[in-house]
Amino acid sequence: MKLQKDNLKIENIYGIDFYVYEGDLICKEDIEIDFNLKVNGNMNIDGKHIQLNSSIIVTGWQKIGGSQKIGESQKIGGSQEIGGWQEIKNNTIASFVFLGTAFKLVDKNYQSPIQSNKLTYKIGDDIIDDNFDSDINQDCGAGINLANWQWILKNKKSNDNRILIIQYDVTPDNICMPKNTDGKFRVKKCKVIGELPDNQIPWRIK
Image 1 (cartoon, rainbow, N blue to C red):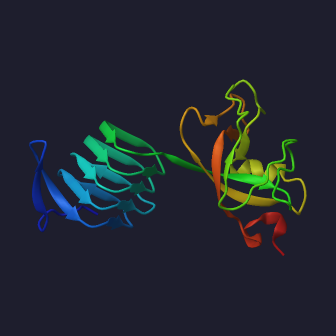
Image 2: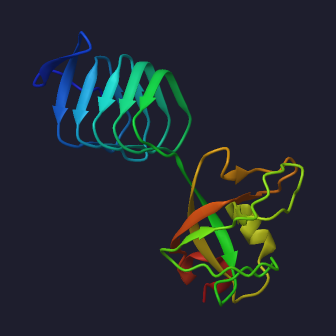
Image 3: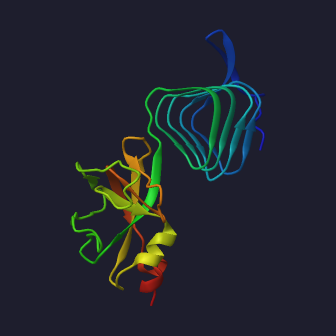
């Protein structure tokens, strides 16, 4: 879809004319924008890609399900979450965090069935491991170990094991991706945001 500017008002910002979209900009398909755009609200490109040939200002948060390519400048007032790759010529984000999502294998008591450090993972909790080991040469160091789907399937320990959905900040000081990873990595802090139901866990489907 190509966004049209016909009914948008113009606002001069930093000596540049921006077309102003009032309210939240929500799109469920790929979108291309070939003019300077200011969104007075949030921007959610649901599961798709965005290509912007000029500059963009978003006063709220921005969520892009796929990739994002910005030809000129970008300024985001709130948080930003990008599902794919991002290419931007100039970028200014006032207050943001890139968020990642991964899985955590737990036993019936919502603790690790593998690690000796038995943290309990409850939905909604923020989990922190102050002993986090950031050494990428350590395949299994201290920290909160997370994994991709393939690793979870290979390493389940019993039919009582459950799978949690974990969200974490994508920052260099919060993530350690070992050189020889087989799909597992560790973070210093994260948030438990959900749990897969039994009908989505292969060994628990009845």
